[in-house]
View: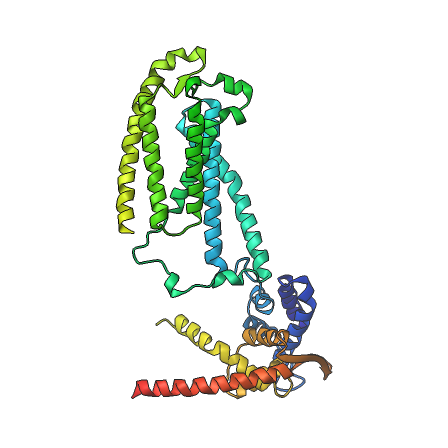
Length: 311
Length: 112
């Protein structure tokens, strides 16, 4: 009679934490034996295997019973999920920006304009790192959650007066992440001599013209400012008049810079004597490129001004 | 409404009340099966899979005291309400009565 019961208890114990196996199995056995005893109408009656099976079946699947006795808590509590998702998406955005940078660096090093290679390297970098980021974030949440340190984030202090206005416009996190990636990539492009090895650097086809060297610094300052502003925007949820004004000002500065460079001697020249054949193409690209840039940025700026007026 | 959905709603409704019922029933020492019978006789039908883990959880929360006893060559874990459990029970009972009165009033009002 007890063989079925022991088999059942053994199976339940298999799903229990080692430290609780003995105690829970002991209690479960006592309860089941009482249930079985209650089936006998007189002391000498032998309870059939079928009846025992029914008692055991009523208890539930061993795995389910083990879970009821010793619940296994989720890695992330449901009340922490909104914050977990936010952190995960920020982490993914950071990785996206890093992947774009890695792919950009690859293209610069390889002096290639192969879009497929760019996507392949970016995707490879993202996939290589996303697993680690998810594991680390999940582990941190698990540990902080168990330690009770996440409670303060579940219901942060707030007041109705601090709620955003009905006209408030959210800042697109992906746009800000793209701006960060663009800023870092721009600085990397401007300062290739600092991070590229000598041999690759010498073999670069194009570079900044020696008489325009001061523009390396001017552009670096502008791009660095944009980068800081984009990083700040990543920490904000909604646009304010001020942050939108700064954003518009950034675009206006870029437009002014492009117009100035359009009228100035060539900023970028062919630096490798073996690629002199490219000079006419490069000249044409930059002559028209600045104007095309001005046109595109002007359209974006007009859109931003319209947005600014609604704030 | 499906039978399954209705069953889930009933379980939800009973969940909190079962704690009150178990604490109340454990004023006299009970072991798992005897407690289930006791509740059953009082009209509270509760399955083993719910009751046995519940009493363990209440013991972990120190609302029930427990001790192993050997009777009739069978060992059983007896549960009885602890001092903390008694305080909690008094508070929960008051809450329950207040809630029950309000609900009755509300439900009767809806009916009329």
